[in-house]
Image 1 (cartoon, rainbow, N blue to C red):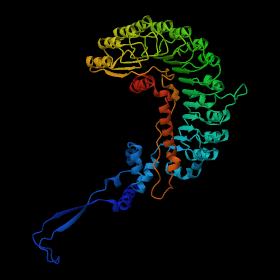
Image 2 (cartoon, rainbow, N blue to C red):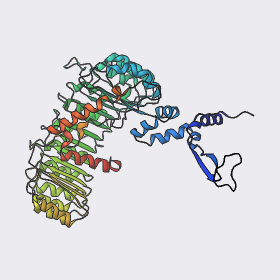
Image 3 (cartoon, one colour):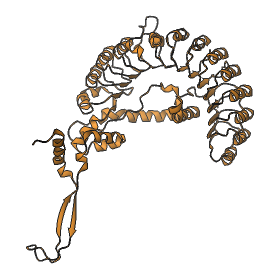
Length: 546
């Protein structure tokens, strides 16, 4: 009788790995010397036992699951154990991040022969290097037809033709993030017309879009019915995405960062076409109360960020508060314009009882509006007050007495002293964390006294010189739909592939140096205490709040 294919495969693996098995020696004494064994009367007879090689009996699918539970470094080490592990590790890797320089073209065939199950791909090139072009991108699309996520960074040699070829081969794409690329409206429309399952689109500094009235409109395309998130950042003519935004009927998140032009016209049309908007970020845009008036009819709105939009006033915020009663998170960076103050915040307090997170930067609320917020918003858990000329000890005492549900409080560059810290010692019974930065009136003794009074409370004090407020309080400058989980692949071993380290990991060292350099100059947007605090809040509460 013959044996099944699976049994034969297991037997084959046993034979292949026979030489790698461990052998253990077990000895026992004999009552008499071994005959013919020489003249040593204390000789011992040795028996050799083979320990069972359970790994050889483990199916490839189970071994792949084990590899997926390891870190990237451990996976690289495992891939060098034997040919079988190298093959399984490559076939089970779904994420890949490559340095997309021009010389990657010659490595594409062997790379994607080994990593033939990649569904999430990041192609990043240094600014001073020549990136891959249409030929390499087309070759990748042929070998990764099941790709669902693509991130392109500084791939300046990719044109509309390359994006069109990619779109025709990778129709299952669900998430596209591109930044500092040179293709234009034709390439973007090719993606929208061929990738009907696209759910997230993030575009930053797309230089191929024609500026002015002659710009070709983008969208809506087949992807309009599936798109849920659109993020546009630093575009000279972002209004050409208007047809896409308006045509995406199931759009839930819209993020617009530093895009030139008048956006009131686009925002006026959105409510008539898009009814499911839940989250809106507006940062450094030409948008006024007219745009906020239009957004006030988005009744399902839960998250609103208004960052450095000086033409937005109390009037527009009041209209949003009166209509969008489901509002949970509100971030406002008033840019010291004093156009949003007590009137707008009182309207939020009266009409948005579900408010859980409030961030005010460069806004001057008084005790009146803060007391109203504390009384009418019983679910307020996270509060940040930064760069305010009106927040002092009296306002902190009001918060301590009224905000019963408050868990996390951030105070930066406000007129608060140790007296305000003493008020927090007896108020806010659910408070777990307090961050105080650049409040000159708060001393180390005051912070230590607060820690001693409430041992369970985490107190973080940084008393430095007052500096210009960070615009990106919400951390939204990152563009929202970023793929942060990409890993660098292990290098090829066992003579199956040539060394590819320069094309895989070459950009990470330069990026690290650049990031460190920027950090020393203080130019990173996420450097401020507010951004760090909010990122931690989001990571700690994102699962249940979003």
